[in-house]
Structures are given as C-alpha cells and as structure tokens.
Image (cartoon, rainbow, N blue to C red):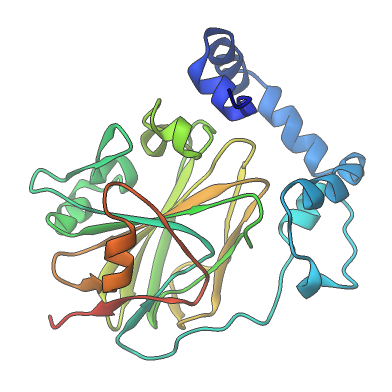
Length: 273
C-alpha cells in the first residue's frame, strides 16, 4: 500500500484530524509563516526545489533572503494569447469547471457551495446565476503570480478572513475548503467577457494574497498579484452565456477531473452577448 502523504494523513485519519484542528485554530500556522519570512528558512529552499522538481532556469542569478522571498520570485517572460475573443488562464495550475445552478449553488469534490460563499455581496452574487465557475488550483511547483484575463476595469479588493485548509483534492473531499478558507474577491469589468468575479483563495501555510492594485484600468496579461507561500487557488465566475471552454478542455475535465494549463494560455472563447 502506498504511503500516505502528510496532507492525506491530516484529512483521513483520526490523529491527523486532531492535528489539523490544532494547526487551523492555534498560532501554529502563524509561527510557520513567521519562520518562512525570516532568513532562518533559507536552508529549506534547495530541498523544496528538489522535492518538487522545480525548473529554476528562468530565475538564474536571483538571490533569496527567505523561503517567502524565493516563493514569490518573479519572471518577465510570460507568453500571453492576445486575441481579443480568447479567454486566458490567469495563472499556472490545474483547471476544472462547474455550472452555477439556478439556486446559485455548485458542487465541487463532495461539497456544495453558493456564490455568496465566495462573493459576499448578495446582489452581485445573483448576477452569476446559471453562469460558469472556473477553478485553477496552483501546486507547489507552479509560478504563484497571476495576471489579468482581459482589458477592462478592476474594482475594489474585498478581503474575507478565514482558515488555511490545504487545497489538495483530498482536502476538498473532506471539508468545504472554499467556503472556510481565507480569500480575496474582486469584480473585473472586462471588455470581452462581461462582469467577472475573481476570487483568490489561500491554502495551508499561505497567509498572503497580494493584489497589487484596485479601482484601476487593467490590461490583459499584466500582473494582477501573487500568493505568498505554498499552494493556493483562483476561482473565476462568469455570467451565463459569456464564455465557452475549448472542446479539448471540456473533454479533459469530464467527471470532476482537472487539466493542466499555464498562465496566458487560451482556455475559452468569448460568446456573443
């Protein structure tokens, strides 16, 4: 039998669940954040690169003063599909998608959610009834910066204080992670895809969601923000009939599955509205 990962152990065993409760409801994770932001964490960088098979060829010559400094490293060579009617992925990660039902709910990995779990303004949330929910789950070896999906206007950033569950599939199957975790939601008034809600969701040990701007004009492919420390998720909510995922992506995500995408990649087309 394969050995359980630490996250599997946390969510599927009795002693693991006790440990998880301690981590989520005490200062243990905060202490971990403090260490990760200090020079004491520098020895963990090389081990993390090796364990997660991270390609560092795009970051030659960069120096890091802490694990957090390494994790939020930046690169400038992102290729972006510039065709206006093409929706791009805002980040590297694993994509899945769900239809938002008429009662504003959608089902992910064993848990039901409402749009208001993510967008706390009920009036705005109602606008996404019958629309599409696109989820991008970032992993340890991903680039943790994210870009704008289109030209338009970015509104205010709304921070929602919450827990820091893992966003790995085993955690999603055992807890309503996206409803409980720390998150930031923002409305993007896009030129080509209408009003879009973008929600950045923190994860185990990820205390930092950094959106660089608010109430500004935005440009497709320009950096919007980044995550600090290990794993995280971006959720995009679209109004009904505004996007159509590419056929090859639809095929890959059948049956609650995910497909690998990269930042700037064409993932869907604009529909006529």
